[in-house]
Image (cartoon, rainbow, N blue to C red; front, side):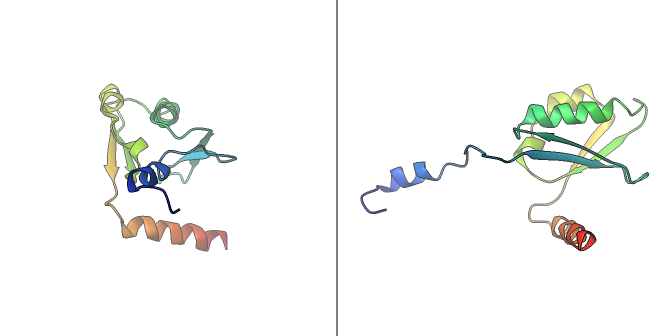
Length: 113
């Protein structure tokens, strides 16, 4: 990479990229029943996430609270308008670099084995 200046180098390391042959998966677990709802999308954007939530929330009576535990992925952030339209939905975020996330990954891997 000789001949590339530091500014040009950082342009090569953009965080956005075209995803070839990949899909995004949204999933929800109802801890009371064990039911899993899922939806796959080609893109991984906030409108995709909100559309998935809309599908799930419509099945729950408005007087029933819904608590969602989410990681800190950017798609899960900045949903204030959506949350205002769905006052019975509460987001709870795992701490950054949480052991909970690592543990749940271990449980999934052990379950599949």
